[in-house]
Length: 89
Picture 1 (cartoon, rainbow, N blue to C red):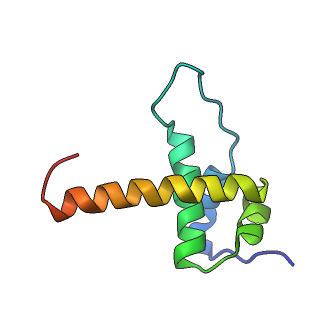
Picture 2 (picture 1 turned 30 degrees about the vertical axis):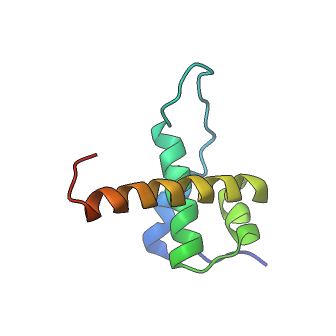
């Protein structure tokens, strides 16, 4: 079954589906990695798609979706805690 993506997220899904190449010495996530993680987070947490549906939409494997979700959740929690204490990142 094909996953349905709301039109407002179509551009995000296209960006998030782009392949990522990260230099081995880089510890900072690239913009594409951030977009992929954010896309996975939105589709899973807000739109209710399953990991398999997200993988189909983003043309990746389900394992990559779970890794991206983990990274996005960790980043979200860090940002939320900073906001909660009114500190700048």
